Amino acid sequence: MIWRRVYAGITYLLVPVVFGYFAWRARREPAYRDHWRERLGYVDSATGQTLWVHAASVGEVILVTPLIEALIERYPDHHILLTTFTPTGRDEARRRLGDRVARSYLPLDTPGATRRFLHRAQPSLGILAETELWPNLIAATARAEVPLVLVNASLSARSAARYQRWPLSLAARFMLTRFDRIAAAEPEHGERFIAAGARAGTVEVTGNLKYDRRENQEAESAALELRRTWQAMTRPVWLAASTHATEEAQLIDAFAALRRRHPDLLWVIAPRHPQRFDEVAELLGHTEWRYARRRHGDQVDNRTDIVLADTLGELDMFYALADVAFVGGSLVPGIGGHNIIEPAAAACMFVTGPHIDEWREAMALMVDVGGAAVAPGPDDVVDVTEHWLDDAVLRQRAGRSLAAVAASHRGALVRTLKVLEEVIRVPF
Image 1 (cartoon, rainbow, N blue to C red):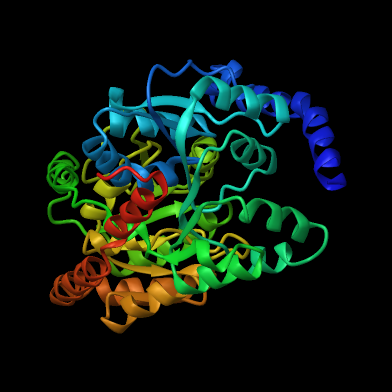
Image 2: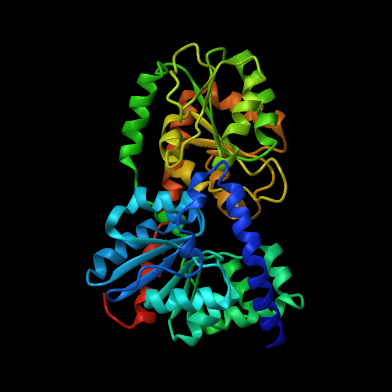
């Protein structure tokens, strides 16, 4: 196909650009300097049967962790290779799974790097999380006769529309028809994959793996201890989670309004991306508020106004800590919101902005039980949050309802494992 040859040529031309980008990112995130050979497919050679799982970054690693733990238990004679694309994802994999899995970066999508990766890794099955569609990688797995499964498969309405327009329609059909199975997170996602070119017989709705996260009792106990350490046992705590550029600035005014009603309110901000931690700290430094950076080990006491949660892997603990939360990526268009199942599972009432795109169906369930709300703007975030902070009984009752909603939608893990069993044709 002409488009494939053109795409392959472009990928080779872009290799210096990509490595230049990594070098630029390394100024703030030194981990981008490491393991560059893996980006070219030079991973450790396989020593036995290998199941390969790809999770792009932190969120996807958290998503696939229960699945990987189940594979480790059910396939004790197989090695697990977990690839990521970002250093933060790699670190999260180490933190959650330790030495139980091998870790590597996904190779850049050039023909040579993908062939080299598969030759050295020798996977007997490839499992990609959500929407990781790389033409050369998928073509290489097909040539190597490696079965390929897309799990928790998600395709937004916007992406689905793009994949149906030429020339992306050619690439989409090529890639999607090479998956042995596509385990869709929701019915509408399954329909979109079929419309984009997937074979109907390969698509099955297995449910959203995000509901199947195990209860994190360690996070709850750590949250209680942190409240004690912060001298915040009687202070209300408001969490702004997974925030993006401009959202923190909008919420600073919201915090000021909330403090007029709740003078002892403690605000915890957890930006979505680590490269923005310093940017948010600079923003806070221009306010009247006294703030502490968790990464620096700054002391937090009853005089602290704001805590910048500039760490990774602690969001579960902060949801368990908070009385009310705001879930970011939702006050600004183009992002689509972030995981609302996390606060629900932690029984933490939460509000989002209006831009929640693919989360609308799940959000409706949580709004129905009174545990969540969609706010058109920052002023509305203030109104909802203030109302909830005033009513501890409401928070407890609605929190329990949220947790029940999250628990009632579990089961995707079992159904996904069944799909993998059918593809690999080896009984668990």
